[in-house]
Length: 275
Image (cartoon, rainbow, N blue to C red):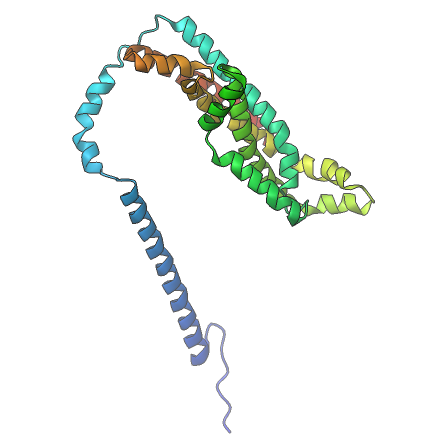
């Protein structure tokens, strides 16, 4: 029986090449299938969202005329707006701070590499519930409980931000290097000591960065909670809208933009030092 010619590097037998071609075709077909599903989902979502860029173009002149009513801005009540903005920032500061404290233990309990599944599952669903409900809904609930004012806004931000930070914190915990934790465990340390000396030093910079990001987001969220009576600049904003005082609305928006820009700049500098 004659020997088959040896395979030189860079070559393959017809059977192997046929198998590789077949596998490549299956991968290509699968990718095309995923692409088709994605396109179908986007088309369906566009239909459900009633997308109509033609109407947007046709209404652009009306939009431009409406925006022109906002100018020039009126800063006649700038002291009141500045005080309300400081109240808004204070609400965000307290809501984010309280949430970051409560999110730490919840994130540990929601991490699969730290706790068993029977603990992880209900904690994650709790965080999902906190995160899924908008701050305005929580504000409505807390306004009924504690009355009108910024405290209701603080509580609303606290609950929603706890769900968000708990999710982000737990993902950071699950991505840690297990080496330091195993080394501490080998010394006979307790579970609490493993977390304190093996987990926290690795995740603390990310946790602080996530908290700063959420503080920026909470300032923006707190600015509209006044619509439901939860204090902050949202009260003045809502009253100006209702009274058709668009120059005052423009002044409030400018103060908010400047405030958020300052907070973003300071937060960016802090994050650069931490990471």
